Image 1 (spheres, rainbow, N blue to C red):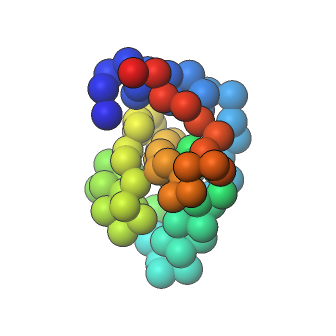
Image 2: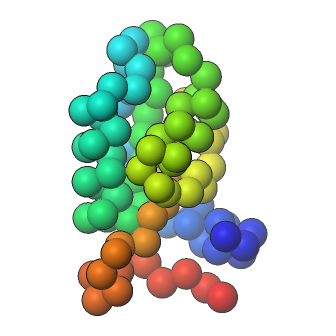
Length: 98
């Protein structure tokens, strides 16, 4: 992913709300499955890490990206943004600049 594409995705993510919260139980298989499902439907997902989560936000982001085969767009404070293009090209909503 180029810096231009990453910047474009960051701009899109600014206007969206976090749809998942990761708490003290950290990354469970259920959360991973739900994030993977949301990525397929939305392509861009924002996740909030709660204060009671003991794990590092960057580690959580990398682990989630690896498990869902997505890319980390950014980690700012307690917010994580992930991107994964839809498998079916006709369903893709986000067109990245080249």
